[in-house]
Length: 474
Ligand SMILES: Cc1cc2nc3c(=O)[nH]c(=O)nc-3n(C[C@H](O)[C@H](O)[C@H](O)COP(=O)(O)OP(=O)(O)OC[C@H]3O[C@@H](n4cnc5c(N)ncnc54)[C@H](O)[C@@H]3O)c2cc1C
Image (tube, rainbow, N blue to C red; front, side, top):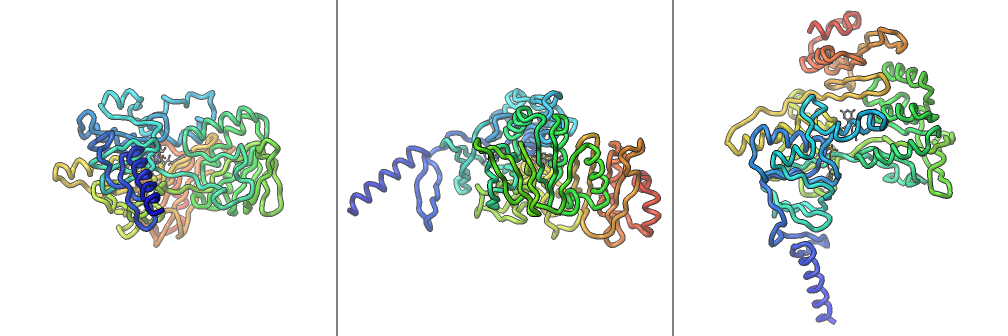
């Protein structure tokens, strides 16, 4: 019996060796894989993830200077890095020009579009449709789902974030067909297909974030009857205050969109083809639905790395150069948290927005190259910045928005030709956050300058009267 067990274990071990080149160790009933005898591929730098941060990091590597074959990007998506925010906006309207290759990075920041050939020209290996399922830090190996082993000297983790799902909370019926989340281009393609198929139907948007506001345009253009459901008293309460939200409510109502506030989806009914047909709300309301979009939050993709890195706020903890707790491993974009130079290093930020993905990637690559040359670079000095566009509205937020007092200025009536308004968030007598609706690039820049400069405010009424000119004259 003992002999048979040993034979069986030997067989298992050989199987593992054959499949993955790895040697099996057993520790506390977890399977741990030790350094492969050989790696299938070796690179000086590997970027794990092929999204926004990966694309901007690649550009920075090229700027700083790399040799051909030194850098690889490994992505489970099957397309080269692109500007992800497009997915909830123009991409949902296939009649527009917003298809790939139009929105490859770095077009979103006014840079060159990095088509797949760009990577080939620069000697960067773009490894697509490849999911990494194991990260072995001791041996510096990444193992793909098909068993390929990629060895790195320096690793940049750029796995981004993923939508939080209603199925995570066991919401009844939440696995029905035509309930969508938006994270990757495949999700957006499936949604576009469903919108075409269910044209003139009913859509329910369950939202706590701004994507929910953005996607409603595609439904409205396709003649859907649209309902928006959210748990708070007003739209996206973590971004808007009640006054800004009220202006959005009236705008969305004018587009024929029905609003169900202070309520949550507690279940879904489906038809015999398992397609969603009804959304049940906690106040007893039942909404008909052919398509449901869920945008209730996101979480950093760290499951691969659990227990291997210091984490905080759900992301991988990094320093002001995006170094993790593991030597030669960096983390950037949505997956990383970092200390805030602007608000004091004791304040740790998680800022899952595109602006930070671009800038953190650049900072990490500069830090990597500087450390190789024995040089120092400045700490990351980031001013949080988020933006969104829906219908003909667009807004930019800079700085910190929570707490304190708020001053709203400008014309909030969306039918007025002067429709433009903003807000200042004041904490301890200083402006910490700014919001501007429908601003010009110069005006947005002025609002950013105020949020960074944190000027003292002596009289809130005077600030309200000054409005935008407070920023443009700052
Ligand atoms: C629909 C949508 C709309 C958005 N709109 C806005 C907006 O209007 N304004 C704004 O400021 N921000 C917006 N964002 C947020 C912004 O896009 C993100 O902050 C940014 O993309 C983060 O960049 P990243 O490189 O960290 O992650 P991502 O761009 O998400 O890229 C992560 C990449 O890693 C890959 N990956 C993950 N795990 C693995 C693995 N195990 N193996 C291989 N590859 C892996 C993924 O497939 C993906 O390619 C939006 C995001 C989405 C999803």
